Image 1: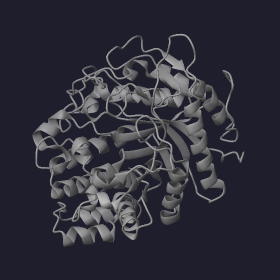
Image 2: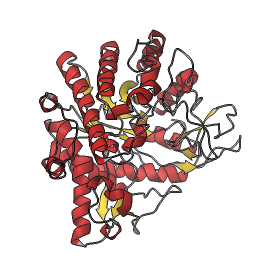
Image 3: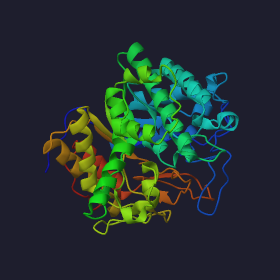
Length: 467
């Protein structure tokens, strides 16, 4: 199918601050929990990343050359408020002001994410992160300040990257939680505090900035039953409800899933709901629904101990799908899953859908001279673009745009520079910063052609093409 996408369809790139910026101790920045993490055999420290703090204009030029017109980036909380709950750092805010202007000057729509796991260290040490109500309040103060500073020139907003990760054990790694027993009550308090933080910022935007749009964002967990056993099917459905639809119900209708709340009551879980919370949540609406998608998996209930909380099902029950190819990192490649997610979100909630993370991480190296022939990346994106187009043209879904993840190489989420998603190579390794030169790969020229045709031409390029 060669259908051209609608006028105004957004093509772009997504990143986080700690995986790109570096400059960990410059510009008045305070420490985040990432800044104190030490390097290991297969992980860099986070002090330099890809040095976008100093090189962002060069990266913007590559995006402009590609034809991109949207960039989702994250404001580092500790760069604009070094303690997280203290005085705002005007030098840090000025950096993002100039950063945003650089995008706009190149015709690239900025999209702001307010939190991508890098809790200010002070808040983690003093309050144990989002398990604490004080951190919720500090985030709302920070978020409102950023909205007031930038909403006049930034249209698209999200609060939390992959917000459903706060519903699984991963929450204790990404919420600023440093000490404790990691109880189920604490897990539900974290997810509720994060949701209330989101609701407060979204409601603030809708009350005060009519030209700004905000949506919820989750890492949609596409989990199939491992077999046709009814119990596998039941558990796969419950995973979908607890990890995906519980958030989507709140983002769209301002209330948690009834199934999830019933579970909370039956298990006597203390979510930390305070007076006024559910009333504030009830006001919540979204202008769009956004998500990340990289792979799917399956659940085998034979592997899940009896009486396991749904929140821990995948910790035990995850099983590879024998019908799918996999990456070096055992992420299973499933373009049809991408189409399925787009449809499920739109069909149930009837809001525009915005995939804002997608891509394939691969171990790559550059010989210093020849172009990297990453046909595997072209094949991955081509299949996912086609799946997205099928969702649009065959299934009738309203899709705002497509943002790939780290399309100029960045540190992986674990700090591993070997795992590269980009169509532009950044010349550094985990423990050797080299010269950080930016070098287009073969996929760069293919993606440039795709964007120029607004998705109509997905055919591969044989040689370097610069159109």
